[in-house]
Length: 599
Image (cartoon, rainbow, N blue to C red; front, side, top):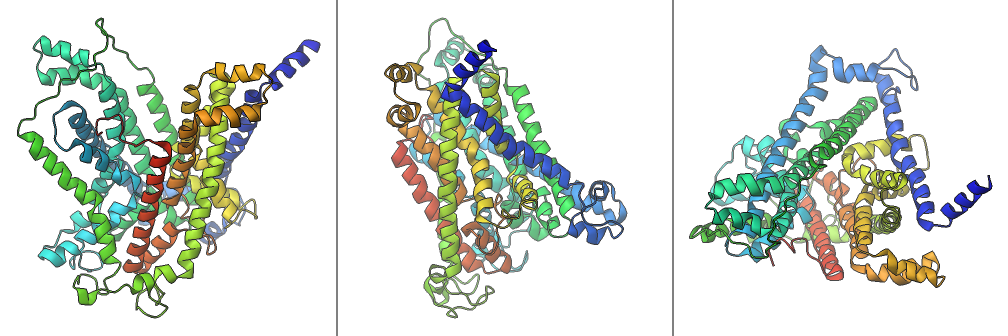
């Protein structure tokens, strides 16, 4: 017993152990318990379910919701509400991941392994679509290609300028969904694959070149096996992200009846809550499957060593005249994805009649007009800069982003410290895994989990606290990964030296650890801030009239058909996100494309 007390005292004396215990309990309550609650609610007859199943009463436990969504052949109910959206989601996610992988990986190879021109501009601009919200390109696509023959019949920029009517499949449906999502997530492949290519031992390829090995053989036998882990990780991450996408399918899929799991889940939320929770549960299972596949396929990585040592000289492939042609094509594409969206949103936010881009049809009333100065489907609201609703939503967005950033950033830093100090222990591995798990759950499914929780705790329902809790847990993976990576770079001896002099743990953190890792810590705070400012899928099911954010009122205006207000608010969000991202770069001294070859 005395020995046990000594061990317990020694265990408690180490701050890392206390931190791990606290977060093991907290993360279990914040992740595993909500998951169990979600699963439980798939069997509970809700008020909306009771209206459908007249022989059952509210609060009863039943398998009826599962039977209804999975096995109802009448009127093709299961096909329309589950199996077809599931097939659409899988096809959409797979094609988007393939497109992002091929496009991003190709550009990464061109930047690191060829004599391509304009590398600096292409590298910096290539990551721009990912900095912006995912639905930005979707709204831009509609602004550019809509015409009187598709959708609601409103002319877009291309039709007004050239008279060309794009076919329906080009404007709405699977094709634009894959293109837009592929462009948005292509920076994943660019960053991961480009980083490996940049740091890869050049001797491996140089030795093969000396032996007169054909370029194709070098690529398939040397380059491709080395980048294989990054390729697989990128595919799985993009697949999981697209599976949980909501806004892009709403803009580009719903108008023509191309529904995916997320859009169908949002529709069922108001008519059959139990079935919506079932879809959320299946989406959580898909995220867990992605994690398992990632560990199985990428977990055992091969290493390659050369006897001569590592060379820093890389023989660039000579593209000859192609270096100018390819660079010109990529620059045009970068302009299309980076500059034209901003111009499009600005124009669409000031024109009165859609499709007429003459000066006589332009007004700033959608920005600064007083109430009643413009006529719109939004009910004659004032300009967004004078609209109390927009200002309140802006305050909510900023406050929510600050709260989530402070909480997620602080918890991520502390978790990173404890996990690294107790590296490879069971408790540290459990906390590290649980802190990353929310990233694998699609945003819509994650919000559904906490929506189920809020029904059990009335103080959470439709509250700002609910949004802050959901945002903090969802963005914790960003901060915890940043915290772990920063602490891995810090030697234990620095802290041990302070411990010898009796410096307390809080003072060691504030006076020693935080100043040394200032850049990484700031990044751990600002990444959740930027992500929260542009988030829609995570909050769209949880906001109320008092807790609207800029992204949710943008969606509300778009659903009303008030495109001017929607475009104006979209441009406002983009400006805020870009300013914040610029601040991140200035404060941390880092750019997302550094180290790949763009600078």
